[in-house]
Length: 382
Image (tube, rainbow, N blue to C red):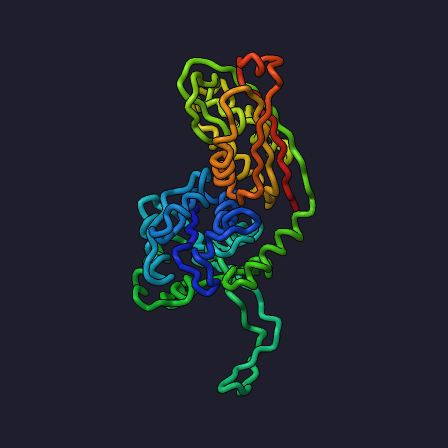
């Protein structure tokens, strides 16, 4: 089965009152949207993922999705239903069998829920995550109770909502312009049966500032396992007129020799993060023997390490890099390096430390034969 996922993230999130759409605000140091993308990406039953976005915020989206190897984003529409329909039309050329439609502002979708929805599609053209209403429900008019409703058959719909692809696309085309509240409503009006799959109270949608605070607290409470990893790397000087350090290109009389771009700072930091989560080292994922990585930018290695943290529902609390060299001088580039590393990892610059030292002319760095770097990463895991 070719199962694709659409993550609808084209709204402006005005109820949160922030300067940018809520899906791009930081949650645990990572854009909120990225949590949803990574959770779906980690499930082996999903073939590919595309986000539906507002093109005005393409730069913010690219930062949130950096390194995830997703399908190209699809432009959303004026309303949520338009965005979902645009997304389905954008996937049609891939000939999907089934599709998940998920709100980008639900960061805590879990592996088991995705599996339950996939199973439900074996016997139904549609299935949605939902939670039963446990509180007594009142109908009220003008501030007064007019009726007590029977809650036994009432559910609160969540996402993901999953469907056989062709029927839900036809349903969305038929419902164009109606501004229905969710994709299950579109399916129901088209006559498609929709199964209920029990969701989770943890799979809530971030809509208000209180929701964002709740999400931060959930992350913090779940990430009590604090890990520290260390990394060390060395690269020799060689021919060239510039070199990369911590993601910043610096003009220099020599370059650094390496299979990739030889960014010694990012290599050490990548190993520090991988070490903190017990996930091997940089050579395991990006072996120097593989020509695919010849000349590759090292930010891709670091982003992959950060994605492995996110897949484990962890967060990068702090990183500290020390560059060891006589030249080039690091001070003039420190702010740019800090900003670049923060951007690659999707964390605040205040969580990044870049330092430099010399060996007082001793050893290979003192003789200016190369540059060394050491790094420490502090990671919070569930």
